[in-house]
Image (cartoon, rainbow, N blue to C red; front, side, top):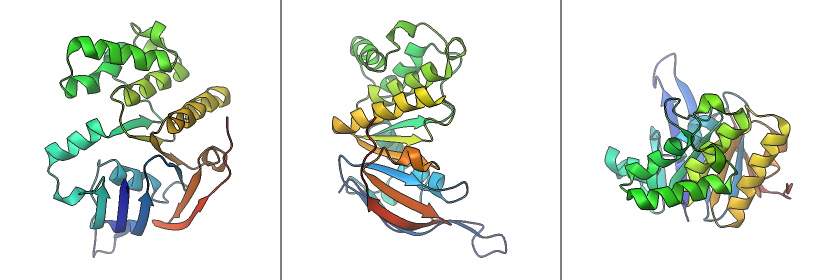
Length: 231
């Protein structure tokens, strides 16, 4: 079991009139190699769930085990290590650093891992070639289209070869054709063995995953296997 969430709550302003239960007793298990779409409307709790799954936040109550480790028992350095080594993040807004070139953006997580410069170069160019932006390695984000920026963001996510890819509305800022290309690439990563967790509000996008977890008002209301819409 790669991910095991048991009775997880995320509560803001607890025990006050302004209490908000962003997550309200969530149980979720994800095995290695799965492609799971977490689907919900704005305010449903899906982004809060992703933040906890990605070790960007910790639960108010409950247990989260990732690869057998209890997140609540880890310090900031250990959590950072998990984020850097085990999880590749892809965001709707790309989250690229504007002052850096495409190459430097992809290289950054490798620097954090203290990988040697020579090996870093091979890993960066391999990742950029895989997503079709190797010819843009000297360009800054402002010099690239939205689709190219998202490809750079994907290259950054996969450069460290993490076992888990977490994609939060990765096609939200893209045109439909480019969005389809991004989803196809996520399917290819999954075929190669990556565990992919896709956060979306769109049922059509969720159809590209083998499993659909539907969340509403901080609770999982449906969890089912589904026929995949292959791209």
